[in-house]
Length: 369
Length: 252
Image (tube, rainbow over all chains, first blue to last red; front, side, top):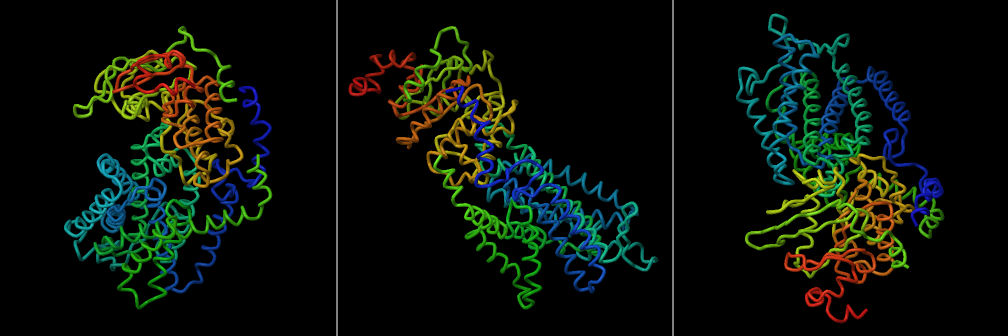
């Protein structure tokens, strides 16, 4: 008995591997679709080259539109780590986005910090906050967790409104220097890179998005990312195989919150002028979550697709603008009911079915054995 | 078939060291004593059955052993040492794995990935395909866990636990709800797992399934151990007959 089992893998494993699906589905060099790392790198490079070469020809409205899209795709993709991969319904993104944006705008406009310093400070503060919060918020689960994190966003909004000395209160602040300079927004300077025009921000955000998605595609196949997903799928089972469940949730929350803050620095500069209204609950907490869920929580491209839907909707249906939150809520409800893995989830399962359908004979052979 | 496979395995002897043991474990839930002064031992490389009527404390005992619950009194010993901070996670990392009554799996992953997730925190290298083959799941490696049949799902649950490369595998009613071929396959798989050196504790209601698969039996009743020993010894124990087996079963 023992002998036959110990020899078996050498014979049957390659056979099985070449069966219904020739692609081993794990390993860091391939993602769920079986794309090798170099394929992903080529796609990423093509997207970057295309963006840089094509973005110059865009008119100002389109530049703004694509910039908005890239910004929200970044925010939603960052949020996806904790919501999609670790399965925690986090609504605190508004507070961390505001944190990064205010630090960025203050750093450039008031304190003359170089860009890296704003990023460093925003990242460290977000890290400290998220680690401290992580110690308490995960005592709650599910809806209670959502409620507590929603509270964090609401507190963030109120701090922005009331801490007038730093934030300028309801009147807001801008990245422009003193009025003697003419009140023109200062560029975001990061070493040799200087972002001043709208199109610069668009390019920068697309590059960051591409890098973030590449990094995510590798991360979710490594131990940390897999621990998040195991925790999401079944906490008790995950713990029973030795996954440190509490630590997984905390690291996902911290990673996501720090990224959102860093994106916030860029986002604040891109807006140039920020008020608490830029970070109200509906805009900065609910909508990113809606993007993640509509597009496909826990999928690589889902948040981007979600951003496309949520940002694109008001663009397509201009008259609906005031009701946009209502529309997302309805859309969200629909997605949760009929497609819990969002748009990308539907595409993925269809893709699986189509591929399987192609080779029915081999599938049967496997079953018979 | 099943019986002969298992009967050929190493016979339990007194010299084998105990991998997992309890000493005077009691568990009280608001006055209700679920376990009372339970002292048991699992000798290395054996399959032990844990039986007893409903409410006898079987699941509670497994929870104590697996770190899911802390006993109100008494101690748990792993490889001869008293355990401290024994949680489900630390027990798993130390080498005590558990399977669940309800087939828990990682639903969004394929069968192979489920095993790899199980192996994520193992201190040893794990051949995921070998684990799948031990559970007769290799041909299913690329299906999503959600696409498996009931019996396969149960075996995948065992595969996930086995992927941690445990020294001890605690199985909470692995045969519950299974019939025919599924039950046989599971029984054979338990034999294979034991043959590779894993110590196993199996809870089950199905007396025939258990008596054929195990070398030692522990009988719980009302939170107390009323009998412990070989199946033959236990089956003739008058207290066991009175409490659980009943005349008709013994006659088999």
